[in-house]
Image (tube, rainbow, N blue to C red; front, side, top):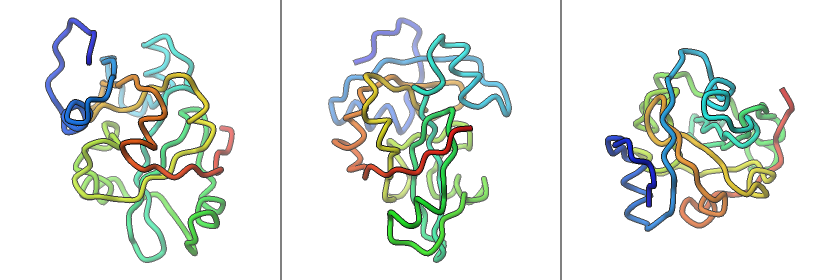
Amino acid sequence: MSSKQKHISETPATQFLRKHGAAFSEHPYTYVEHGGTGESARQLGVEEHHVVKTLVMEDEQAKPLIVLMHGDCSVSTKNLARQTGRKSIQPCKPEVAQRHSGFLVGGTSPFGLRKAMPVYVEASVLALERIYLNGGKRGYLVGIAPALLTQLLNATPVHCALDD
């Protein structure tokens, strides 16, 4: 469970992790508008490559999906579409992403989503020892073992990273 002394209010993501008995650490930071993973990594003193962003995207039929990507990389939507058997994939508009996930953009977690969506994870994320991803609100990351992504979310590994 959490080892942080500072109390963080529960989010759908932390409720999901606790319900599944998942070990995680809590990492609050000061949210900066448009600061992205670079800002959270800097404040927490971790490599941006280990901060994983949760992106809500949609295919050509407007069906939503989640992509988990290194903070210092972009998603090749062409490679992602090819590997997932879709014609095309694009990011959702912020208000659409919010409707699908139930989280504010900048605070989206793959855990505790409002509606079930397929989850894809950049394969190299799974090779890291520990990752930090959004805990369900802006300014709050959780540290987990990457294996939890495949165990709890049934995340499918893909190769779609582009270096930023």
